[in-house]
Image (cartoon, rainbow, N blue to C red; front, top):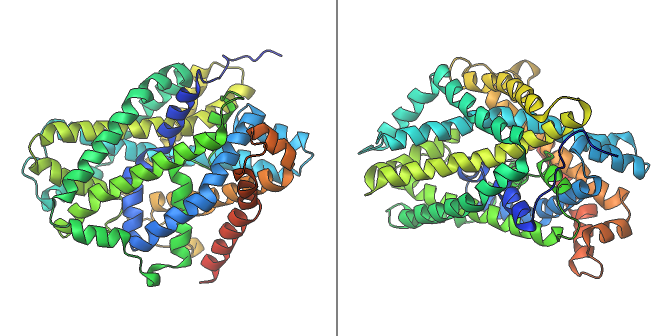
Length: 457
Ligand code: PHE
């Protein structure tokens, strides 16, 4: 059978790894992780995060890449194929549909925040932070997000780049870009972390990040940690399933997943080490919310020698990290429409981009004109959440855990042990039974009990 579109296949294991790490490392690490950790008490959140990453997110990451490689199509059609082959119930299609719709929704606001990163490249380049204290960086940030036209301009630019790359095809453009840029990003985050050790808030920050206070452990904290963990390694939205579909049969998925998770967690922790010392040095609130990174780091860029250069490079790399994640959110959607609609990838990517843009306007407005509009309040649910907060909350704390749970049950219970062992190339490997045990019991029971506890408490 011939496909109407160009073959979709990574050219090497290295290319896959860089694309997958490019997907995992993004705004989730440098923008979302620090402020969510800050809002959830710091140390306890980070400890639970590490634990759930190892016991739940990593096993599901292996499962998701594997499902993709077994189906070799978009998440929706991969699941259709696997459901049919295994005579499974149709409810499992939630994995394909939920993931794909989730990716679309998340991309709508991801592009707005990605636009912030782009805007900050401009600010850094023009030396806007020179001599700024925290009042000044706060003012920069607030006046920027107060302007819906400015936000939308940068959102549009960000989406144009994302759509442009996906339209051309991921394998050639992206592969080449991520290979050199990801290591550079790593280097810069390390340098920022080292700089932070010299500030006076460093001790307090380490205490905040690594002191475990049992009273901070609430079901809500654990749910936030699971949601953040899934988001950060890119599971449950079909991104890794799509990338797995383009992966060669002889690459070890287990080893790749460990590399992806370690790189991802390492960068998130380093981002925390770069940001929290500044938060404490300047008496800011660690729970300052989505603006945290954009308000704290510019203080350093405005103070240190070479700050214009370092700041510009930093926000440039943050933008690139965000784009390499955004394309992995668009790809599951485009891969699917490409399979069902006989139009070119370029046209389909453009149409998808326009729809994402339209939904994204809700997020743009939630920072200004709609700042006091709480869409779910009439339902008596999430009554203090703006359009953006509500999308983010529903996607990360409800949709992603549900899809992740179903992936783990599907790979653990519906697919036969032999088939999975074979497909993973894990015959006789000692980690295989452990992994399967986590999929069948640890991950599902973990996610379900946290859901229940969160509803009850
Ligand atoms: N992992 C990305 C980040 O941390 C976001 C993402 C989630 C991308 C899910 C794809 C799928 O920014």
